[in-house]
Length: 611
Ligand code: X8Z
Ligand code: ZN
Image 1 (cartoon, rainbow, N blue to C red):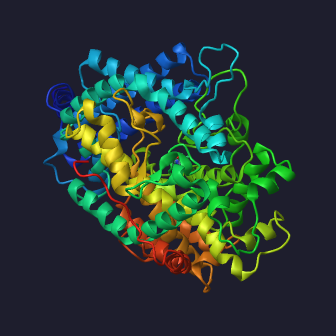
Image 2: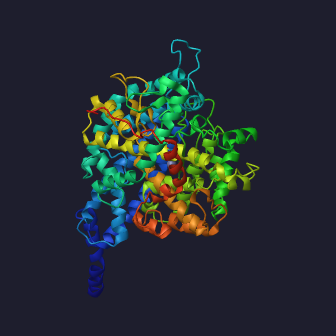
């Protein structure tokens, strides 16, 4: 009896201690950290799936109810992550194995919209955020607002007209019309900034911008410097493209395209935001170029529907050795705009359950642009599927630029030879078509670079308080001038909030990722071409069908975010630094050609002082 009671005593002691440690002073050992992360991952997985479902329904059926439901689900995740980050601080002084330390770091960085712990403020923030994103999704430009029957245009309709119209007056109207959508967002956006910053401070960051810049396995200031370095590598190429495009637009539009300062009016570049210029290819095409092909026309003549266009993307991945998309993808995606309700049409890829329920949300109309965007989006989904066996906190990209680069890497392989292989064109254009094909591509990829860079330059200034709400728009145009060399069609009034007319601002999606992706994709592509045994000029390579290239790619994707990104990059490319050299190599023949065309002209523009 005695013995047994002693035994009981000893047997119960550890349990009693652990009960004590749960209720009063939680442990800080490595084993405690492991247990904490295990339960955190299980809990967050559940919460995040519920949040994804609410957001999916919101974005595919916008109304007041779904605005509220998605805001409430976001709030639950943010509240819990905030608590868990604070709880995890107890391991700050524990020497943890690298995987556990990394998980805690990733947990801390996981919110792109940190929120205050005060439930009232948190609720306000999530509602302001859902309202901003809803306002963008519902946004319409009504050419004759007083006429109830006048047809109002959503963002794709405005985009489509701006791609096709060659009437500067109509283009200016469309541009100004769409930008009105953002006017009522400005005050809500400044409140959003205040509240999100309060949340970032509670998590130990100076502001939300610093939190965003902390996600790159380097010091946040070093990250800004790194972006400047990369921009420095490609800026000369952009300047030549800008100068050439300006000359051709002046020839076409005369005074409407001509400015004393050398900037290009933003409404003449074939895109609402002047972010990609491929739609004005016909205006800048080399005079004596051999005919190439127009993918939009080919797809239209074949009556390729949304499903077929998506199928082309899937086949490419399969040719590299990836499994087909899971059945849920085909059953649950939204790939065309529904006729009867407001939806967020901006294309996005959804990892609903962090397993095989992956979905595409896109309003495919059948253009050549859709063809590339489908590859972009499927890149996200094949990445999601590849890392789904990782622990929950590692189910993400090496960094967010990697996620954005995967599909684009594949799309660089859409060469004439590839289009012939899949039967979309009958004849491969002669080598003399290289320059027009490269120019067409540069209008999208090279023109994008300064835009990709400036969006977050603006947001970082806003989050840091350097730019106050009254100066939001002036600061925006100062950056547009500095980096892109573009100007608005007319002076912007004091009520304008032009950043809000771009999805990622009201949608609060960080944007430096796209700048990085524009550079990484050429680095990945060069490595895969090498792996596929290709040795010719980089711009003619397609690694379609190369299982060797696919294997290398897949191995990197499967890592998820379990390792710092330079390791993932090294495994795939042998290089551990981002390098725009691959992009410069790809466009080298075009750069030389542009320089010849620009002889006698001076690339560049002047930015008014004080801006
Ligand atoms: O937003 C996107 C994708 C979804 S992640 C369609 N992109 C940026 C944009 O449209 O502004 C891709 C390129 C840049
Ligand atoms: Zn994307």
